[in-house]
Length: 391
Image 1: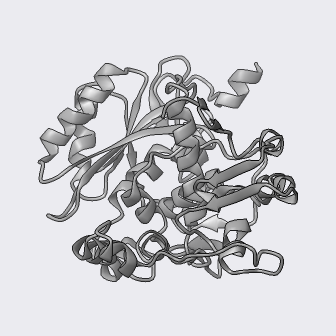
Image 2: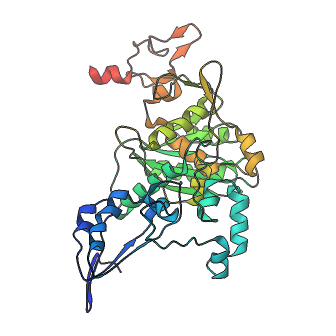
Image 3: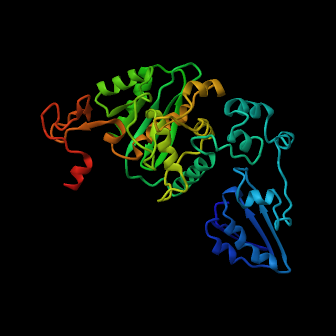
């Protein structure tokens, strides 16, 4: 069914966006059936818009179905049989139900338990069918990431319109046999896709990234240089491609959006920038779109939230601790985090580097003696990007 409206022998059927309750409110007939799909994401105002149809004497029914999410919203209230909603008949489809019906294999469920962790939001929501947040200790809440996936679907259904803004590819190079090399392609506000490769040497990885950069000269590779990724960066630079190093252990000079907290290192800063880009309470509203990939969602929601150090800097769970806890690395999320690292601020803000507007030489913005005021190559006075724009 690709049509949004069908004229049938016994009546009509039409589809409406859940964000347009006024259109749904206008439905009137002797016999009505409302179908709410992915109900966890539907606002209570849309459910309320249908209530007028139930006041008549005809046959009117509503069916709301969804995978569960955080314990909040109208769908959760219905399933919890909150006061005033007792006229809904509820059914929790359990993992055992799904296995008995042949819709899910026990082997798949067990592999997801191992992969995502029994106490993760992904496992509780997607496998056990339980309302579960588990977000109080996650850097990135699952519900925030799911909203970004919904925005990706809107972008995809609109014909994937071209995006303005920074174009990058985050490159997370595999270090161990079970890890995967991941490339995250970002165009403006959209992470268009994630590509994964197993058991490839650094030259093969360099070739794959070089192909992307050759096809789009305006795209910049951001490469994790801790470990064997340094070889990939060196090869790309040797070939003349735009490539920048991401060293997660480097110190950070940025502050969080409140201006009150700093970050223990570049990795913590980069992850918190993604958190800020996904925060639904932010003004303006988030525009970041993430591809529909369950492994990516699991990776993003795995790291535990930062603790505050005595120096006023935020710290988060280390990669080694994550590997010990879940038995793997968050490869896809790491690639996305790197691809989005320049989403807030300039390259100078992100990496502490400057490019001379006269000779195009690149150099560190500061020395042990203090900030540079002149290009070390041609002695031209330093002009920051925002100063150039105002001039």
